[in-house]
Image 1: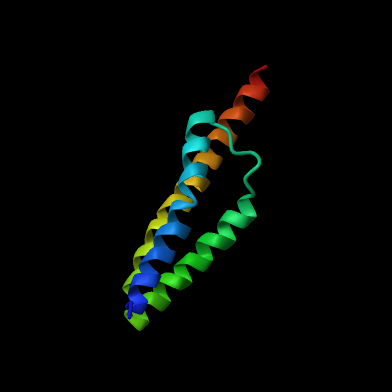
Image 2 (image 1 turned 30 degrees about the horizontal axis):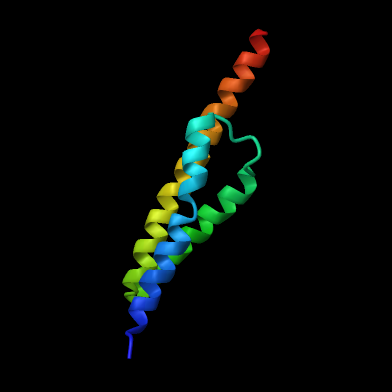
Length: 94
């Protein structure tokens, strides 16, 4: 019988890595206008609650996945804000 933690780590890896292509695309294109700021803020807030839950329940797979996903989504939000300001400044100058 496979330990439930194995399923947890597999799920954690897949759902966490799913955000990596968006980080890479945003970084390469230097554009994130199609990414919703409200969605990112809500998702990041939800991740914080998952992290608290994981700490309180001692769930290592949930904790690791949500910390990494938090970092990836915070990166996307940061890039969105950085590139959004850059575009606004460039449009103003033009």
